[in-house]
Each structure stands twice: as C-alpha cells, then as structure tokens.
Image (tube, one colour):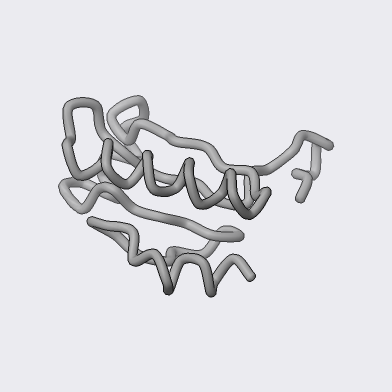
Amino acid sequence: MTAADGTAVPRVVLYTREGCTACAAAEADVARICGELGHSWAAVDVDSDAELRAEYGDRVPVIVIDGKEHGFWRVEEARFRAALS
C-alpha cells in the first residue's frame, strides 16, 4: 500500500508504549508472523503523540491491519494470521 504522497504504508501498525511488557510480547509476535508471511509492519509509540495517547490510552498494544483496528492487549495468532491471508 502507498499513501497519497507515494510513501509506503505498512500493512500492520502496532500501537505500543515504552516499558509495556504486553507491548514487547505483541511486537515480538507481530515481527515474527509478519516476517514469516512477508507483510510490512511498524510499531508506533502512543506516547509520542498526544492524539494517539488520548485515542489508545491504557489499551495498548493495539493492532491495526489495513487501517482498521484488529485487536488489542495481545496477538491472537490464528486470528491474526487469518486476517493477513
């Protein structure tokens, strides 16, 4: 996928927070699964932006696939893989 300005948009975005153990676990899962399936992904720290912090609060990690919220708090591997296929 590409944005209107031509830059690549990752298929999966993982909203996280520094120091969050659930976020670290989710990031490892997303990295492994996206790597296996060949999908692009990015992690975004919600504390880097006031709007993101207000949107996601303590609900991190939050997984977004193709611009739509897929889930939060943990990666449900079978469901995540199915959404990417």
